[in-house]
Length: 424
Image (cartoon, rainbow, N blue to C red; front, top):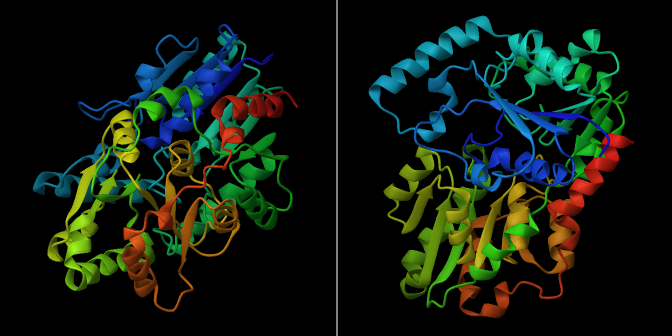
């Protein structure tokens, strides 16, 4: 790579969570053989006693990282990492009141207060390090607008946005007022028209940008994938022999996906009542953040689900390795998006139960025989899931296709594609 590259990724390790993995992996491969060529700016990790395990993986990787203050109210930023207490609830409301008062647009964007960094610290880094290309990865997205201001001082700086989740199109209803939403739409349009290049993770998102912003900057697709270097984990973490049938959800459970997780849980309740012996053979795990509302529903209905919460990725891999079936509840607004967990599932060669509407993802899974798709359009989704649960006693009903080739989605291969985009 001939460029001096600066990556700005808010969630980069040591900040915990899966959001930092895409760029942790890319930096690992971009830095190979490119001494002092890759620099990273990220938010400081202020989560007490919790670090991303990708930090260990990056030790010895030849890149330079600068961590800057998040400047976002901490009782809002780390809600998913903390159990609610009276004090935290009070501080949450207090900080949210003032954030709404002082912020235009989406106040849930963790980068809304990063403007000062782009006026002071970041320009100094660009000058001193001789940066030629800047990649700003979202979400969050507000700081991509701040990045555009750098063009005034550095007209030759190549600015690329890594647009890995739609800015405005996934949430229905959007969690802010229509006036604030319109402000964000205008920001999105300005950014997508003004950057030098756009990287997105799927043809679906590419088509979404083409539809919403006809005058967009040049578009490239660099999908999510998996790190073949993790294969030593994968090879050692083979499925343990057990009489249990393991169903595991990997990653964050979103409360807005009630149209999928609720019929799934209701089908489990029906199985518990109608086929108790089969129900006892199941082992259901939720690995990752689980909203309190879902936890309470599970507790109220006395379902035997192991809610593991947020655990470091390699321990999470150990849990995924035990699975017979990997669960994937998708947003209906993203039927063509292959999320990060898709890379994990195919790396471990796990049969997927995917809950979605028809689109590129469902077609891919069915064509490659690597999972079963449950469509929301089904008139009685709960009964369809229940029937699938009844079929679990036959292993052939959840057998991953042994002929499926996942090699094109290794991060090392995708990093080569990324370099081609940067240098194009």
